[in-house]
Length: 226
Image 1 (spheres, rainbow, N blue to C red):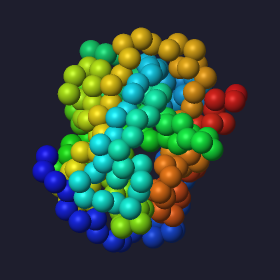
Image 2: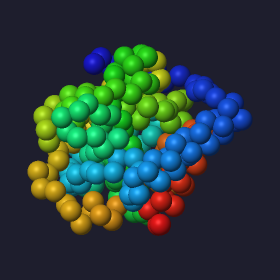
Image 3: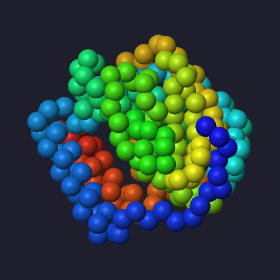
């Protein structure tokens, strides 16, 4: 991966009505899966939660977001899971959820297995191994300097590199993540990640992203309460 290109402005993928309709469709699918499975988590039903240390070195091309641009160290909680919950012998879409504490609460990032190319970074991919494919946030965030995507890529089973890019630009590494090999079973039973409600400071969800994602998250939360 080379240095990132300047971050560009503008990332409107859907109009409000189209995003709302797509969000309602995703919520219906989520509700259907929850009804069939009768499980607390209709998607990513089983996961492994570990603790980790994120060492931020700062992106080489500045985004205007301190958490991406500035060095620092964060203690994080990470959940790795298979989206559909298929047996490990069958390829599945892999997910990585990361929670970072702040002085006022915490924020969440969700990654799904994709490619890293200019088009494939927006396309879900499947594999048997959770370490075989890179992962991205799939949808862009609004930064002070325009839309950005984040990516995570395993260098080993317990180490990942984190990257940032404009939607069509090259990737710039901003952090390295070291995971503990110990599984936190208590956290797996209790933690729920929500990147819409718990947004990274300095990054915002576009309105069309909220309309697309929020109904499915609400449906998933209701299924966990029933």
